[in-house]
Length: 80
Image 1 (spheres, rainbow, N blue to C red):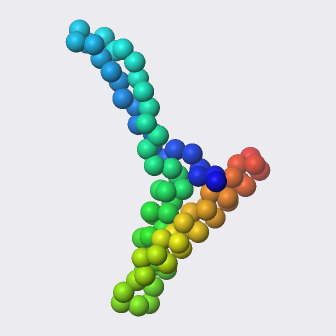
Image 2 (tube, rainbow, N blue to C red):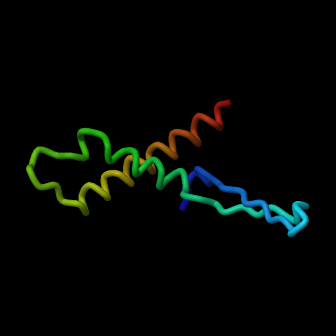
Image 3 (tube, rainbow, N blue to C red):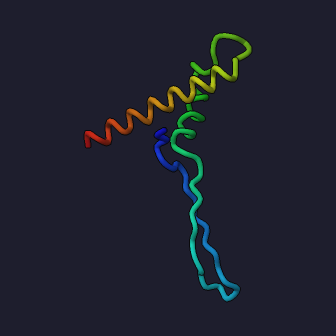
């Protein structure tokens, strides 16, 4: 499954007591797919017409949109 890679990787520097940097490691953070899905939940379509929104349907819709966004991003990168 393509997830678009890391959206917000985080670096952490480790220092010895004297203040000299020993090393840096990275944590991947969320994927671009997860970020796109979360952002799409702010879209009016995700809110539906009913007073009570089915969370499962909203989540499925959000990831469907996120997958489409990743696919389009990859298509445009191939053209570049």
